[in-house]
Length: 272
Image (tube, rainbow, N blue to C red; front, side):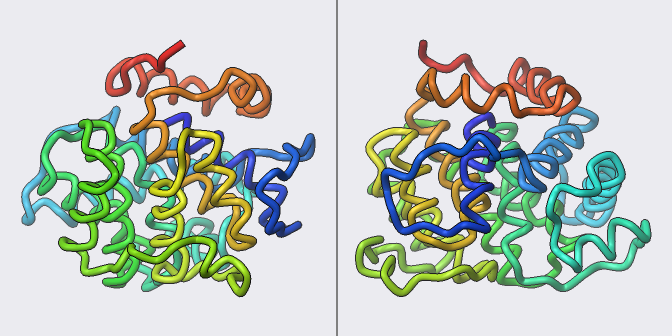
């Protein structure tokens, strides 16, 4: 899960100051954003109730995720949320939003760690989306990311991950980053940003290169790096020390506490 948080932090500066450079410097002004806050909220919802659900329990489980998202918004109201999410969270509304943005996909990393059955992962990812991203594109994007994390941590190779995601979700992942990078620009729609974020992992050689691939697309840098970094941590099972040292100082203590509790329950120690 830290891989997602670190990716968010590293990419945060470049969400505003877009770059196409792979060897971009880490910026002192980098910070955690809504990606980190809401992944933490997802983790907290799982810590409070990790029981598997059935389709009949989907709405109830969605409300449990929603409570945590609104609670964490109230604690971190200036973390860079989208307008639709802000309206929903600040009003404590129970009305579902129909966003097809990538906000549902960016916050499902813990689901890929916590559950060991793909069908359960699909249900949990959908439940986590329904309150704010009740749209088939957003739900499918969230499911793709959660399944990718699961497959990566279970030892699937990249060809297997690419094949399973392409087949299950009918999203072609055969394109190459260098072919789309020159004209790629910021766009937070799920179908525009989530598949490239996954390919940023698929074309990587280690954790750092996955995050650098994502940021250097020149798009929604923090979210794409969060997704690519979250999958990369599960796959490579290590994060460079210099990345940890740079990012750890920027994580709020209350977020760190939840992450540590979640790691103890669901994430094996990283390689040293």
